[in-house]
Image 1 (cartoon, rainbow, N blue to C red):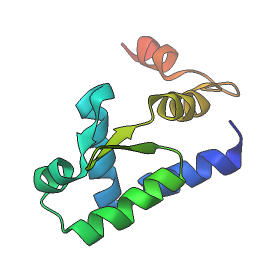
Image 2: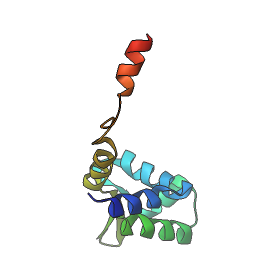
Image 3: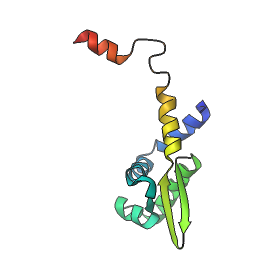
Length: 106
């Protein structure tokens, strides 16, 4: 992952409504949620949900699949893992790790 992708994904999650949507989809697991169920669960208008889902889809964090007349939203777990890995990969590379500091203070 490069910094532009990570930045775009973090920007996508930087809105409280989008973060609520994303968390609901992460919690839903691989089956995802139908758009109507997601709307009902979060209590937001359809147009608002559509706008925010588009941002998450554009950021690569959410996918949508039409099954018959139902539109299913899913968290993209591969992208989520890549973003988390990008943030954690170089943890403490230029300094002491928090675990070391906490152990020394105990």
